[in-house]
Amino acid sequence: MKRLLAFAFLAVLERVVRLFMPRVGTHRILLAPGIEPLRWKLGRLRAWRTFERTARTVPAYRQFLAERGFPRRLDTRGGVEAALLTIPEMDKDSYIKRWSIPERCVGGRIPRRGVIVDESSGSSGTPTSWIRGPRERQATRQILQLGYSNTAKSMKHPPFVLNAFSLGAWATGMNVTTSLTDVSMIKSIGPDKNKIIQTMQEFGPNFTYVILSYPPFLKALFDDDRIDWSQYDIVAAFGGEGISEGMRDRILQVAHSAYGSYGASDLEINLALETDFTVELRRAIAESPELAKRISKRAEYGVLPMVFQFNPFNYLIETNDKGELLVTIARAENLNPRIRYNIHDRGHVLRVSELEPVLKELGYGRVMKSKLLDLPLLFHYGRSDLSVDFNGAVIGPDSLRDVINAHELLLGIVENHRLISFEDAGGDRQLHLAIQLVEGRDPVGLDAGALAAHVFAELRRANGDFHNAVLTSDDAMLPTLAFYRFREGPFEGDGAKLKNEYVAHLEAAEAEAAGLDLRIVAEK
Image (cartoon, rainbow, N blue to C red; front, top):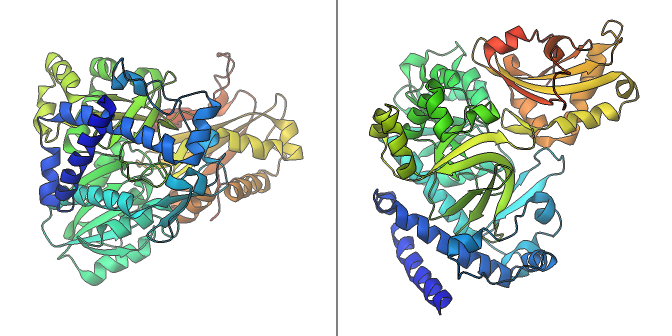
């Protein structure tokens, strides 16, 4: 009876909610402050309902649960929230790769009409297709339009969106274009500086240009001196990877605002957004070690987290024992449901009611003044699988290892390798592939250029996202590679720890001190 009443209530509620969502003005009512506890609870009820619906109607999920001996109905006698914690995790390897797309769809089939397919290749090298039905695309569109409308309030002129995300089948570029066409003039250019500058010069300064892309591209674009940026009103929005506050400050020298979005092709492109509140909070975390210790895991992970806000009515976001985010899309409309999906990102959730007393205690009450929404906070620390982001692509140390091990000469002379993501003196985020040679081997005598070209070519062949990222990268931010003598350069401190370190995230001063050799640059 409890189940029937809860699900019937949700059905009525969602009919009402759908009446408010199409218009941005009424959609804002759904995010009004003061009802966060209700949204939080309703989101968990929706996740419960979506789990049981998926278990009943999706063939792949029925098999997934059966293999784990898990029932299709939750035992909620101890509470819905506790019951949700018992559902098995899924990820790309355990679920997506094991069953076909139709088997993962509601009803075991792909609808004949209204479906859009986009693609991601991630770090695996094999493209993965993701299908989006009309209801979920509508939801994504409405959320993007809402975020866009909030930014539009600060615009001096009529808006003109320049979509500089990668186009084609890539998820973000495609979805941004289809989502914002109804509410703005838009030109889908892709990551091409020349065309963006040409477009702005052609249309002139009487528009507010909303430029959307990956952070490194935005930085490179705004460093281009072929245009007088001071003559234009610009809003910057980014996704695909995080930024340092130094890079944000550089972008803000040209744009009057710069906000990021968190999403993933595996799930949805716009799960959470930066706001004025989250940016202020992030800057406070960077400033105060005590605040960072109380509310974040910066000391543990060595990374300043990106901080976003998300709607708990639509998404149930949890953290497992490994510190990885688990996401349940609570809406029932998705063709291809994901329940407690592990994208292997590190992060955690903090509610505003938990944060506020800590800010006041430590003298950061001013941060709360920028809060417009009481939506919960998502702290994101990057990939848990030791991957690094480069211009919107994800590359892992295992990919570099596989290239080395498949090459007869490299296999015999390489001791260790490391992906080094660092910020240079100009604020640009760079990727350096450092390869340590075995003891006694000297880089002198190696045909380093030819070996580096081979490594880059193989990485690009295996990882379509990385190939595209190199093609669209500014010349000043192309990845570099170098061979180092045993325990020299960035490997000087190796041996002090039991385990090898395969990834390093360095600030500008740390990168300079590490003695990185940046002479061999990837070719486009």
